[in-house]
Length: 484
Image 1 (cartoon, rainbow, N blue to C red):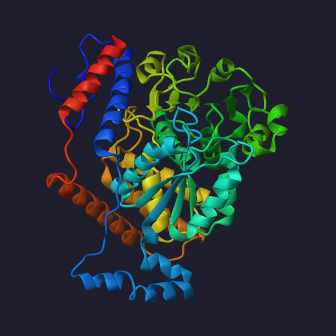
Image 2: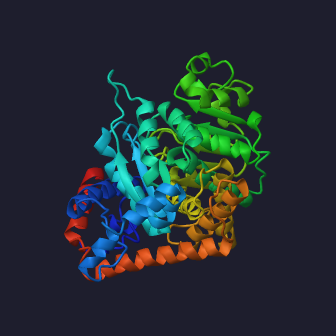
Image 3: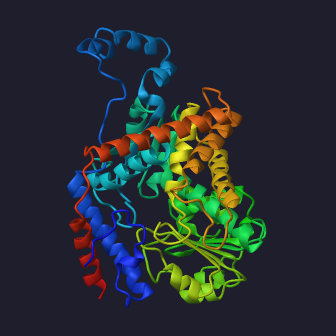
């Protein structure tokens, strides 16, 4: 087997020519998982802590620590907001999870989420110059149940050290209470990326998909397959952006959401789902196949596929149907199968397929924008602004059926997004400091450049060692053998 290019630019080309599209899709998933395991062992994780201040002599420790630092403590004591300029708080995010719903793997135990949370921290740093730390917590109470109040109290105690909180992989219904309580009671932004982040990037993809097919958001018929934190928030943001609730139908594992779902009404923990039961699906449709007939858009965030979304559902949809199959790590239907069934535009959450509608395009820039102006909240208006920022950036580059979203290597997009979000925060009255759009853009670009120059320097000088390509070749062999 020939050596593999470390850049991994063309994953499909790694596999035998006689592999079918389905075999390649399955093999890529196995390959990426095996390579993840070996590379994480090789590096011992993905993140470390490095100083940002220089050491010019050992007396500088008397400046950075005692006795000099006493002046910092008393200054912050007298005005807590000075902590943003006298510490790294203004650029520091806590990625908090109890690991109860990690990607498509469910409850992975508290430390089981560390790989994902470190990944979020890496993306924040590389894509937007934001510092972040992974904090996986034990949310069990004395009864052996996952208690949302434990996460709430933890974050409240944590907030004096951070400029923002990124909640991640918290199972429903706990995630609703955790987010809504903390958004109301904390004095820094609390962002649930599985909900608000997924909602923002999905809205961005939908905006451009509708531009391509020539349809207006207020006219479309939308089917939402899955009714967890992600899809319920996507639905809420799409409705705020102008969709007609009477033309929207959501489905959970028990059927359609509508006013007769007494099981949802009876459980106050699912208040977000009940809100949508009251607004959507007036015809009380309980069969997803029926709902898909004549639909313009199908958005699935349910469970890993393939074969979760059926080709016949897509075949029954309206003209130029739009399909988002965004389960991780495997979409509900592979893009080639959705296209074969008649989908005009297909998006997934993965970067190895066209149209990646993934939170990595949203949260780094959104959180950066909030941090730049020391925002107290991230409002829904800020999330919708971010969606239009992403969509408009891609539109300027020339959108088409296979390019509805910016790509992760379009660096300036994150700075545009951060600046747009910062301006919306100022407009919404949640910013502690004022700045211009250009100042926010230039600050973000400078921070991104510094991050990437640092990583490049560390790689060049061997402080970040290059993995042996045998690691990649072994992962490839396992993947090929697994699907033969």
